[in-house]
Amino acid sequence: MKQFIVMALVLVCGLGYSQSRWDTSIELDFVFPNKKDYFYIDGKNKIIDTELQDEGFLLSSLGIQGSYNYYLFKKLSIGVLGGFQVQSRPDFSMLKLGGVLRYHFVDRDNVYIYLQDANNFTLNKSKFKSGNNLRFGLGFPFIKKDYFNITGNLFFEQNYFKLDNAEPLLGMREEKPRSLTVKSFGISLGVKF
View (cartoon, rainbow, N blue to C red):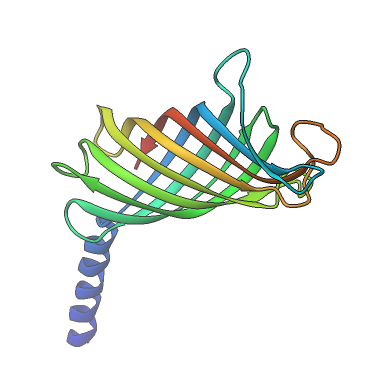
C-alpha cells in the first residue's frame, strides 16, 4: 500500500510538471498581399512569369489557426498547428496543417518570434492542387491574465500554390497554369492559454 501511495504521488507531481510545459493558442489572421507571381505556359509552350495586380480593398485573405505547443526549454517551444484560410483574387479556400517553432525573449508570457511551415490542402481541386505556407512573425501579449494572454502578431508569409491542370487565372486561350506565389504581410489577434 505504501508503494502505491508513493507511486501515485510521483505520477501526480510528474503530470503537474508536464502540463506546465504545454500551451495552446488560437489566432484570427488578417492578411494583406504584397506580390503575386503567376507562372503559366502559353500556346507556344513558353513559360510566362507575370505579376497579378490587386484592385480595391487590400485585405484579401482571412484565416483562423490554432496550435498546441510543447516547451523544449524555458524559452523555446515546438508545436503542431491547424487552420483554415480563405483568399480572394484568386478565390482559394484551404485547410492548413503543419508545425510552429517559437522563441520567447524573456519568458513565455512576453514577446516572441516564430517560424511556421504548413501544407495547404485545397477544398476544390479545380482551383489548385496543393500548396505550402511559410510564415515568420513577431508576437506580443498586450493583455496578461492568470490563465490566458491576449496576443497580437505581425508577420510576413508566403503561400505557394501548385496549379497543374487547374482553372486558368487570366482566362486566356491555351493558358496552362503552373504555379502561383503570394507574398503577404499580416496581423493577427489571438488567445494563448
